[in-house]
Image 1: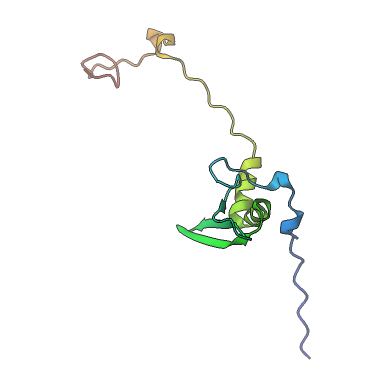
Image 2: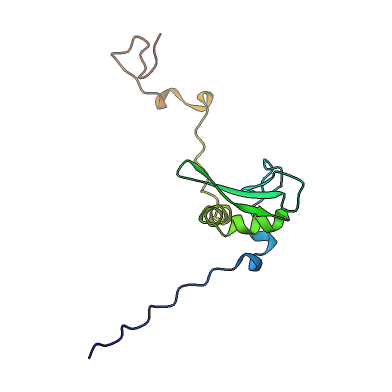
Length: 124
């Protein structure tokens, strides 16, 4: 007799759109709605449109009554999840400060016999 395959392992549960807090919405100063991926396009019952760019193509994800509702839809997309992760990532470490030209001593400059100026990488 054939055995039934075991059930697949449970998948992690992603929050539904209504479970996302307002701090998980991605704000944007460039969007006329105040949220990334959300644009006010009319004054009707559903004036806010959600769109993302995938592989160079604009993908429209629907129209919604409020900017917050539309922002929740955007936040649940792969693009929104990536934006949220990037926003919450720790900042990169600071780059070492290079000395200014006036702070370099003559012993730190690289001499070159082949250069007409006497220094490597410096030309007339």
